[in-house]
Amino acid sequence: MAPNQNMSEEGESIKTMKLYTHVERIKNELASRDLLKSGTIDPIALSEIDSMHYMGNDAIEDAVKTMHLDSSSKVLDIGSGFGGPSRVLSATSKCSTTALELQPDIHEMAKYLTKMCRLDSTVKHDVGDILSLDLEKLGSGISTYDSIVSFLVFLHITDKVSLLGNCAKMLKPGGIIFIEDYYCSSPFSEEEVKSLQNDLYSVGLPTKKEYISHLEASGFHNIQFIDKSIEWTTYVTERVEKFIGNREKFEEVHGEPTYLSLLHFYKAVKRLFTAQNLGGVRIIAEKC
Image 1 (cartoon, rainbow, N blue to C red):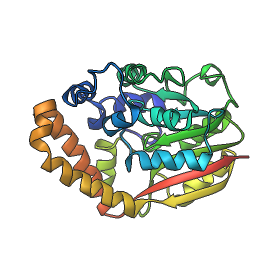
Image 2: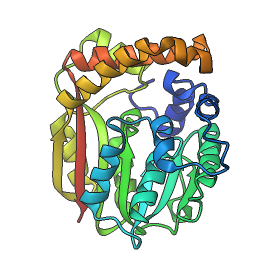
Image 3: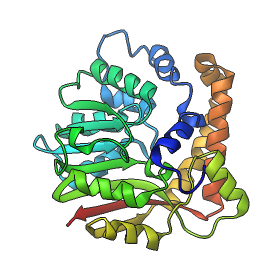
Image 4: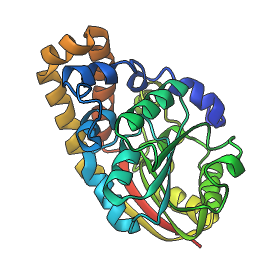
């Protein structure tokens, strides 16, 4: 994936990324846990299997508190995946959330899960590319949202200038952005660059200085750059150990190919974090 790829080209690559294949595993997991029997799914119970970010609902709770979300709040979740964070945001704070996802198959699954959680009145799903989408047609249009969230998605989008510029357009003045992302803490080795591209579909990660500069140029201030590297390194290390220990049970539900593809991805992320050149960050900033 070349550094100057646009988001549409990136999207085609993300569709083949190991983490985002085997979409049927969500339904398999639901069935194995008997979550479909009642006809209604608890979004908090569902969040154990439908979220792909780190630290579970603790991160979502932090976002709710940081942005002071309530029933009057309108939130845009960029790269919403299966919709787990969007549903937990709305279920816990009563805010209205627009879940924007690039991949159509994941988008359809997310809509299904939201309906099963009986949250389709507060969580709306859109499919599209934040860089090429007609922003006027997203939700209620530009300058609409009180807050934007995104959990481990921006790392796949090389063009941070356009990305953050479009985020600013969607926010009201004074609106808050809450991002969890990767950044370049120290120069990557050649092997790490290849792993980032081939395993994580991430090219051209910015340094802390570059990220802050992009935010400022896009019209954000009061920027908090909260390093999460140590915490996330522990998380991804324990994730690999737990996943290996749970292999037999996982394969009974999902099969060996799904297990091996996820294990490959989890190990790649662990290697990158433990080498200490890949950094994790939570960014909180306000639109001027």
